[in-house]
Image 1 (tube, rainbow, N blue to C red):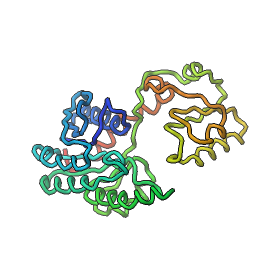
Image 2: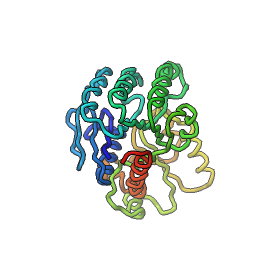
Image 3: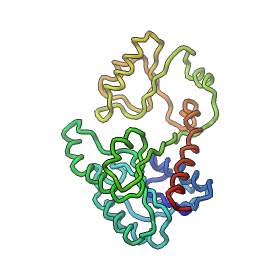
Amino acid sequence: MRIGLLFPALPPALDGIGDHTAHLAAALAAESASVRVWTAQPEATSIPGVEVVRAFRYPPRRGVLELGAVVSADPPDWLIVQFNQFSYGRWGLNPFLPIALHSLRRRCPSMRLAVMFHEDFVPPSNWKNRVFRLWQIPQFRALGRMADVVAFSIQPWVARYRSWFPQAQVVHWPVGSNIPDVGCAREEARQRLGLDPETLVVGVFGTIGAGRLVDYIRAAIEQLSKAACALRCGTWGRMVGDFAHSCPPVFRFGMPGRYLARRFRCICRRRICCWRRLLTGLRRDGVR
């Protein structure tokens, strides 16, 4: 089976979906698939067993229109588009991506298309998001309605959006952690962080500001505090506003992946299983 993956960024660029794309490509190649990644990354880190091709420019937004000539010259059996609204354009706007993929489908009728939605669209939580939704929802619909497989990173979206895309198989493709597994026991990790065995740690990723669901985080911490357990809050990123004053004692984790790995080894071990499930699904849909 020949599989192509599309995403603008790859390592060494700091991008979680770019990391996922690289790991996914390597895992699929290890399962005997012929894998090629089309990207806008000028100098991407090599991926074992995978051909990486800079197929378009980004920015500008219209750079994705260059995909047609490159991909159609040697089309894959399956093209997997990794999608997050803000990865293809500022404000989550890129009307050229649906145009490019529609043109590619006409030029390569035997190629099947899977769109992996890592996010759907912004919630209507403020005036700016309500403006963004004016184009993000149509983009979301347009991409999903031209796909043979529509995949989501979380299970609840499968049920929520299945009726939006009646022509497609709508599935859940779990996303494994991109934090490397360095093999560290839980007890050792807690000892290095100075945590007692009885202390419960709440970990919060990323900058905590207006774009995060802070009320949910705070409510979870309050419920745990009421349970009368020893509690610490570990953060990766910058805290904004009064959140730091309303949560239990805070410590900051270092950012290098090998350091974070001591906390997430069990998650990393699930990654290859998720990707075997993806490959099995593509083979079941008729392409081998």
